[in-house]
Image 1 (tube, one colour):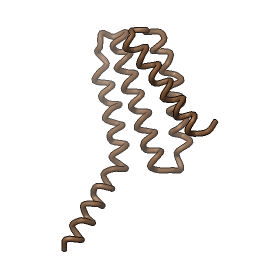
Image 2 (cartoon, helix red, strand yellow; image 1 turned 60 degrees about the horizontal axis):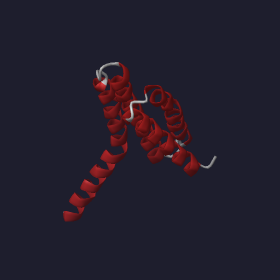
Image 3 (cartoon, one colour; image 1 turned 30 degrees about the vertical axis):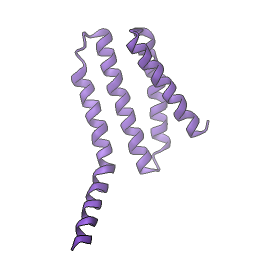
Image 4 (tube, helix red, strand yellow; image 1 turned 45 degrees about the vertical axis):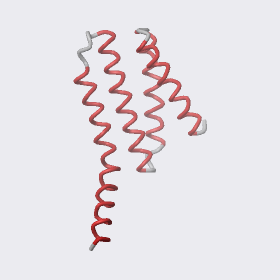
Length: 116
């Protein structure tokens, strides 16, 4: 399957999962985690040779884990899993910081050198 088609399928799975969440379809929402996360992991694995795509796909995988942890907490654990979900959200931000912080520092360095 072509990458773009797989990415689009991934979005469809994610939307179905979140629709199940908002409609309180506990079994369907929980089930939809598996294809959604599996495709995210596959995209992450396939992008491992391109640092930028890999980091973004890894962050998306963290986001799905956070999102699903939050959903399952609302479904089955009286909404007590938000602190765990927060860890996955923060991990995604940390992963993306490996891409964006060097760009910011480089741009800042370039601007300060051009002023001198």
